[in-house]
Image 1 (cartoon, rainbow, N blue to C red):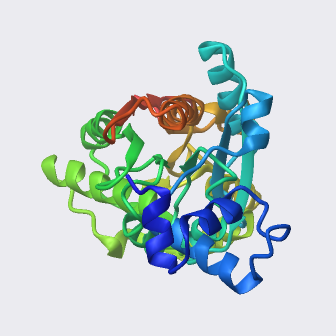
Image 2: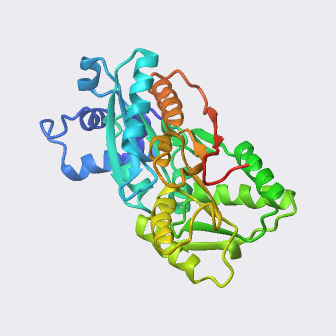
Length: 334
């Protein structure tokens, strides 16, 4: 783990100068802005972490939460519920620092934050580019990857194979072969991973699905409506529609219904989504069936690991997997 001497060497300054900068007294100690900037960059590059005096006085830790500014995959109500559940579970109160970032700039955003501002961080990375840059960050940074598997840092993921396998068994038993998959155009690794598992499970049951079975659209309600138009214009309508998130399903269902394409009368419908969407999907007609990701459980585990990192109780990265489930409702039934 990097120490203050390492930061001083990389920045080309004295240890006392590093101490002044990292403890927020650079200006009163007459350290130039250029030198302070160089020290902070060296600290970030080395993954150097210090305890903020203000945080120590309050007796609370700061845990940062990095998430894409334009994400539709993040439900802050669910994330907040998970954080509250963890605080009650561990009996410790900590501060959560919300850090929004633009896609493709995750690494830059993490590096821009002073190492004295947080003790550990939970990272939501949805694009392949951000995941690649994330893995290239200094390995001694106290980071936890949300709903993914990291080769470098601690991570919490979701086991999707059992519910996908269960769903495919039903698909096989019903003899469905004309299947349409509606996916977002954004390069989101969770979706790519889900698709790969779906393709593999289908292949195991003699159902050959490829990207030719996919219709890509924007990851919005409007994107779901665009996908619905595509279905209506198909000469041979699908027997089963699978959406890669509930936003696309919610956008497609009403437009299809207004044009007399009714689930489950004309086709069946299955969606990937959050377990916490249950209260919403039950009110749709038909009520939506889900391959359900337990977002709140993932949040609890991520912040549990982050707190252990903040308290220096984890000597090496750990990886935790949360179970997912198949929730069968009216749209996709046995």
